[in-house]
Each structure stands twice: as structure tokens, then as C-alpha cells.
Length: 465
Image (tube, one colour):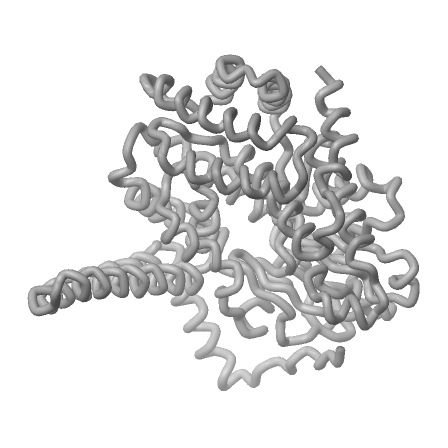
């Protein structure tokens, strides 16, 4: 892939006005005024659309009226997703966080928010240059021999650029958006309002304070790239015994709280079957590597890469790939370490599931703070239904991946219907990671039983008690 040289410094005549505009935008962001304006405009447009639509509904028959309302709801969800993607940072993250909340939000809203990862627009090089230079203390041209001005990817809190070091090493540079630290306080105040709005009207008790504290804690973690570097190093050490798993090496001298520089590896997305076929790579072998890696992380290590979408998983594009493919993991910002108490409750809950002991399972749910006061009877009825489904499928640890995915969909529906049930975000990420692995197995190599590959690690998890 060709890399363009770093753009030359702007002439003084044009640079000063741009710098002034950048400072003005930064101030508006830090005060929360820009974010409030975007959200207020969204609310006004949405409200005006519903008023105008309600007038038109008077002249439509019953079927047409419902179709018009459905179209308005879809349009408003699309507008919300676009606005959050444009705001980036806490707002895009709030949307992604909310997309996991099967216990709080409607399916339509979650589907719209789940697409945020692919909607975030990139910033031009001039907007992120100051972050790199301010964090690393030297001009961009002195730090890198080449720095591609076009990012290879943009996400909610950062974008990634390819670069080359003076010694010739190829690297990927993850750069945080410049306003995030300065605007975090205002962003979280507005995000708190959004959490209250999204959960308004939810049947049963919703602990809004707990929801927001989980979100804020996760956001603080993701904004700290030094933490991400440490986590990547720890996961690399945990998986070091498997030569088919690769975690990029961090360049500490070119990294800080807002900039993270890692070794660059050319790779093929694990879901790009055509490219894998051209490289002679067996998808079933890729799946076996992924299953080993994730099963060890979630069942044994308790620290896992919690963002396993296709943009973060690659097969290294190298001559040996056809014989022995190596899988590359990138982006460890969303990584979770399970609290020991939560791990113990999960272990006992799994024992209760194996014994088909719904009462024992409910006790462990209580230990994890999942059941609101007064909601036990309804939760118990839902558990009885779920345990009956599992019993009809067979022994829990003997289920095939397809059966697990079917049960996952049933469990999601149960969460949506059950009042007073609220899951810790770590548990939702844990479940999301495992369910993604199962779904990826169905896509890559349906003949491979992912559950069977994970079973030794699950048994080791059970044996820790």
C-alpha cells in the first residue's frame, strides 16, 4: 500500500486562521455548547417531524397510518445514529454501550446504535497533528519518515494512520481526537441526560446511576492509551505459548495517553473468504486459532479482548499463511478484566445450570446485582422457561454452536420481556464476545464445532472452584 509523505507545514498566512478556528471549536466542545447544539437540533427536527407527521396521519387510513409512523421511527433512529457518529467520543461510545443493553432498550434502537462503529467520519491530518506533536514532544516530520495523511480507519475516540519510522519499520499510529480530554466533563453530563432519556419508560426498575457509572468507567479506560498498551502486553504474554496468535508490539517511545504506536502487520480480514481462498488459507484452521485464543482469555485468564468485530481480527498476509495461518488481534481499548467476585458467581451459576437448579442460578444472579427488589418472582418464571429450553436441547456443555446461538436469541428476548432484570456490562461484553465467536464459526466453517473447541477451557474454569 503506497504511503504519502506528511503534508508540508501550512504557510503563516493560512495557518493562523485555521489555528484560530480550531481553538474556537475546541472551546465550544470543552464547554459542551457544540454538542448541546447538535443534540438540540436533532430533538427539534425529530419533534417537528412528528408534529407534521401527526397532521398527515389524520388523512391516512389505519394501515397507512401505522406505516407512516414506522417510517418516521426509522428516520429518527437514522438521524440519531448520524448525530452520535458526528459527535464521536462519549456520544458514539454511549450509542455502542447502549446497543448491548438488551435489558433496557428496544430492539430497533439497539440495531441502529450497533451500526455506529462503521459510521464515524475521519478527521483531516491538520486536526490530529497537534495531538501527536503535543503528546510526543516533537514535530511530526521528526518523529516519522512517512506518515500517511489518510487514516486507514476511524472509530469513536481515535483514528489510525500508517507510518514509517526513520529506521524503516512500518507502524500503525492510533491518535485520539483532539478535544476529547478537554470536553469529557461536558460530554459525560450530556451523556447522562441521554442515558436517562433512552431508559425512560422502561418497565420495571432500571438503575440509571449504575448504568451511567459503568459507561463512564469504561470510557475513562478507553481514553487512556497507556492502559491499552499495558493490556495489549498482558494479553500478548497470556497467549505467548500459541505461535499462531499475534498481538502487535507497542513502541513505548512513540506512545502516550493519547497516541499509541504499534508494529504494523499486513493482514486479511477474517471474514474475507475470497481473500483467504486466494491466499490458500483454510477458514477452519483460522477458526480453531480464534477459538483457542478467546476461550483461554474468557475462561482462563479473565482478561479478554472484548471488541471482536471483523475490523479487529486479521490473518497475517505472509507466505506461510497457507500452511500455518497466524491471527492478528488489534485494538485493545475495549478489553475487560472480570472482577474475581463476578467470576466466582459465574462459576457457581454455571454449576447451577449444569444441575438445572433454577433457584441456585437465581441466587448467583442476586450476588451479581442482576435482580431488582421485588422482581424475583418474574425473573424466576423466566428462568424456569429458559432452563426448560436448555433441557430440551440437551446437556449445556454438550450443545453445538448453532444450538447456543439459538438459545442466545431466546435469552435476548427473555431479557427484553423480563421486568427488573439488569446485567452488569462486563457480563454483557463476556456474552457478546462468546456469541460473536459462535456466529463467526457459523460463517467461516460451519462444520467446525466451536463449543467443542472451547470445552477444555470451560472445564478448567469450572475446576478453579
